[in-house]
Image (cartoon, rainbow, N blue to C red; front, side, top):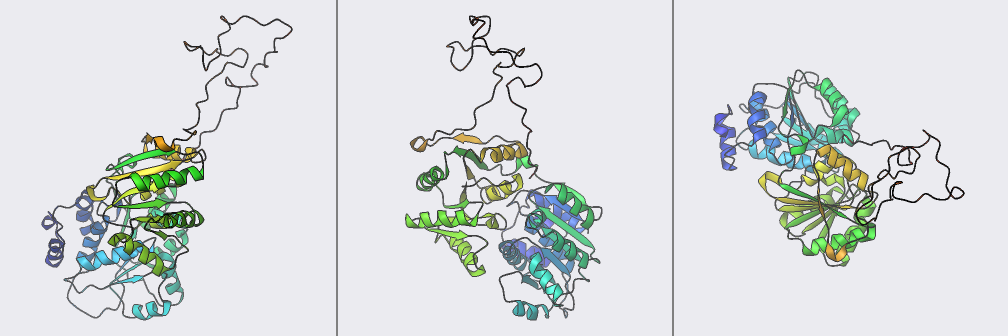
Length: 444
């Protein structure tokens, strides 16, 4: 129960009104050490309640009587506007019975208006790295008295090229007393370097190993011959699958625009979300999806983080994501908070290696699925087996019906000497006549 945590009564009152009864695993593990002032690095699956896990200890630390605000006391860094907006809403819900004031600073809003708002000095500043750096450069922002720094989805910020901005902002918070880092993925070697710089003797909490992420989501692949075949499969799935709301992910804005145009032309209630869209358009797309005005959202990875839509139960990867971490965040839009979800990836020959590397990263094998009405000729690469062409190598045994294999030398009559091909020089080729391929791995 939340009442078991050493939280202020005003926070417990807000929690009770929000019908929060039993803490999630990440909340049970993270809230007590965070309340004790420890630095934390927490890895837990998307939709597991990470926001409350850092919001409640943060608010508990700052809670007090009303007094003039003269400094920013906490900074929460996030990768996208959508995630920042969602976090602000959560902070305001939890702090409704306190005097704590939170403020949002992201791109897409008026810079002068933000500068004026910053002069009122909020207790908690929630923002994206790029716009915060702009306000630092303009002299509108001071962070030297920040007590608590929260890095949410820090791996995504690194993926988006915010490494220098993150380093500078954490440096501006040099006098902080606590740092909390939350993410759904490990982030790899670059993240380990960041952790070494920003966390001080942290407690590491891994609530879910990568192979355990998204356990409530069925993961399938459907093979396709080409992009046109993928489009036909997509239309079939949207017409025949049972779902409340769906997201279709692409790797490029141009592909997202193309799919969106095709869907609208066929009468599908769809909306589109990518980096070229204005802030108002992106906000409208998410609101329409949440309210049910549109059942389908076509998006690039800008929507893979910070999008929490109730009833979103189908994710289709039109393009396979380029890393295991990105895959985790995409399919994490469904199967949230114990609900069941379905994630389908459409795989052409040029997607197969990416798909295989994601399977290795997750230590999982995706379910293979075939749509009978649209079955294509491509069903994955053919296995390359030793053929016994090189001299001195093993001979391949014959199947019972003799198909698909060469007969062994013992059973096959020898050719006349004049027609026999010369043997390959020893040591010049491998057993299958090919140089060994280097295995490519993906850490995500």
